[in-house]
Length: 405
Image 1 (cartoon, one colour):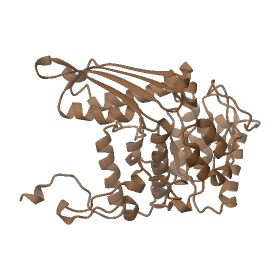
Image 2: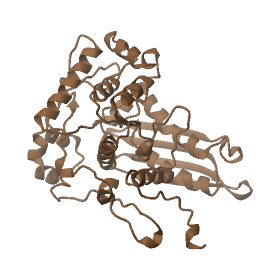
Image 3: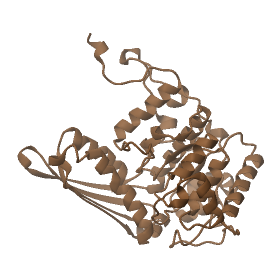
Image 4: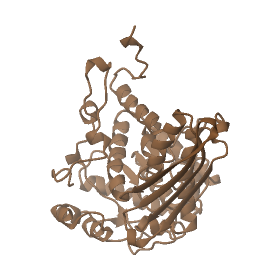
């Protein structure tokens, strides 16, 4: 809303500030991404959502303390008008939170039906032609695929039977996909990744992507690690620790929720370094991840990385990175990007897993028989080539022989 009013620039948003090269380097064609593909206009977006607390968006933003009050007050009326719908929530899945604005139902299928009713009402009340749903809720406990996730029929039976393997985020995903909405999982917990919901996404023509948006320490890892690998510099160990004091930090102070985040944060290095191909360089990496809840820090997360590396003749060296970042400030532009690109995917006729949006995620969704791509620069190339493909432009391989033949 501040962007729409011209109060600030959309820094960090590829859809709003990025460009895409078209054709040869000598063609000098690099339109903005917004000029190149038909993205929804920011002025046409209506925001809504669910929360276990009944504060409106202005009250919630003031409580979070991320944005300056001077800026908030300039969009107070718009934010105050956004009131959360009652949420599907169960403390079994997020133990460190509780709130009064929670739905009740006879079973999980009933709760899913209530969400579908909310979606339809929101669409009608706001005269929207299309909707996108992004799960940005708190990290749920670590779950693995169960029998109820094996097929859509099994999942729907699990909803009726209140299967404990079906978490609230999966209920939201089911409701969204049932209505044909694109769905993105911004958290690390198991959601639309399961076979049952992938089946539903393909059935209803819904694009899906996730999981766990890449904002702070893992963003840095997927920038640094490809550089070390490109130069074949060995890595003996990578120790990562974080302190943060927002609600996310409070939730992750629970070991079961932290397990979901830990699995998400630790996977990237294995796939980038490919130790099975480079055993002399990466086979025995000691990779440690810690997150500590420290209330005085609020939303201003701090990440420390100590990287023990070795080079020519095995001589040891070190990298030390201290990233003092603002969690929500890094997350906001990529939530916008994912919503706009999912909407574009739907209109382009894409359905199911959108691997081209891996650029935004710590644990990218991918086809079951292939490995995920974690290298940030390959991910960006894939994203922009997908946009070129959508518009019938030549894909760019960076071979460049035509300039010298």
